[in-house]
Image 1 (cartoon, one colour):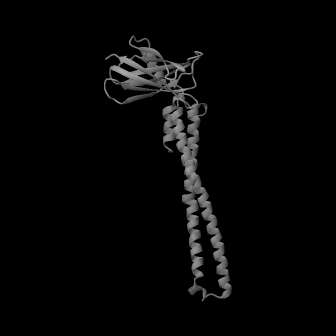
Image 2 (cartoon, rainbow, N blue to C red):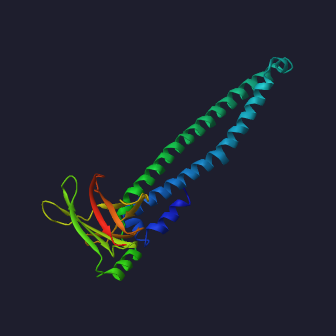
Length: 256
């Protein structure tokens, strides 16, 4: 968990400002802090509380052994009274350290669950990041290619109109660009996350997943692969801030 946080930041974020300016970055910061707290909690009970509790237990066991019947008969009454007082004192200290350890241990599963929640939220917010340079560069290199594909469809619930561009629509690397508009007002929708799932209709080659990145102007784009020419089905999944999914399906004929 400590390694995947910085690695995720290097892979998904293009600038340090995105750590605080994006939902993904803020969730990543919270995850790193939670992992640090989890490590600190574990180190505290493993390196500090457990050794102290172990020493206190030995002292308590020694005091109890002195109060055993065969030992107590050899001790004067005053000494026996001091031993009883010492046992009570050690018992109190042992109980106090045990309760302290239990309280600390209760925080570990809470922190662990919180880290897992952050990981899940990072997967959701990954589609809301600013576009990386590679898809933009690829789009400029392939702009104007005559084989590019363009179409517009409605989501299955007929709430959004989705425009899809596949450029250059050839086997290999392509740039996928999507824009979303409200079906009633025609206003562009920008505060959503969009993912594409491309599967070949001619041959079972699995599903190619492409998480699109926004450009701040109402378009979402990223590069992905169409492994061969032929008929492809592209499922467009739109995630709104309320974590509601809206889907549309497009069929694309890619030249060989």
